[in-house]
Length: 350
Image (cartoon, rainbow, N blue to C red):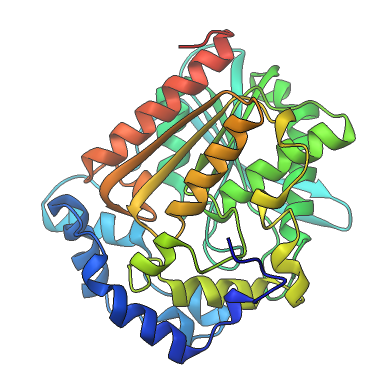
């Protein structure tokens, strides 16, 4: 793998991007019909190309979650959120500021095992509302208290602000989730994309600093490297909703310096102490620039002696995980994640 020290790939030129796109366009796999329907609907919502926008403008663009709701509406199906026991919004106090959070309680008396869920968005866009469907599905299928937390975003707050917030939020959950019918002896972390990177950083920090390591982590198409020259980056340079150009935009907005791209908190593949990670489930999508690094992270963890379950879902793209209302493979992915989490909470393995 070419390292960031040798070539800052996240800063590759527009000409290079065009070259990669032209050379590999025929290699990119075709989305299955359900996934394509969501992509077509997203296109119809008329969003502007995010790499041409400021972060503030980008946060106002239609999202894949909006496309799912629009598609359901067109089909005459319900767009109501999946019903669970109770949902409560609140704030978590951190040093010098607060972050938004949402607790999803399943039906029943509890105490329930706890999932700290972390949304994606390249550390720049999206929020807990955007990823509401993922958190709800996990609460129901894993029968767990899910606490979804936001974090300071770039470019207003550069790396490592989001990482610091998520670790602080996790520590808060360990101390306070029992007040929400949570069992703080059984806490797992789940994250999507940038959130997958942040979830893994909780495990890294816990092992390093001596606080409670999660009993399990589910990393859904996690950002695990600052290298944007991998096989899947080349194959899926022009993919939607996540392209190589958009990942470059995220890195440019988030990282304070070129050296940050090789920081082990960004490039998890370069991190030390991976052998101390909890049992891990990694889910990737075939049509996604991040597929290669997700698989590489699974291989590296397994080589370090960590129990790893890895599955790549074909015919789907980045962001598919929360689309269970319209994409069958999203249901399958959530079912896999929930099964792994339930086994971890029960102290069993497959």
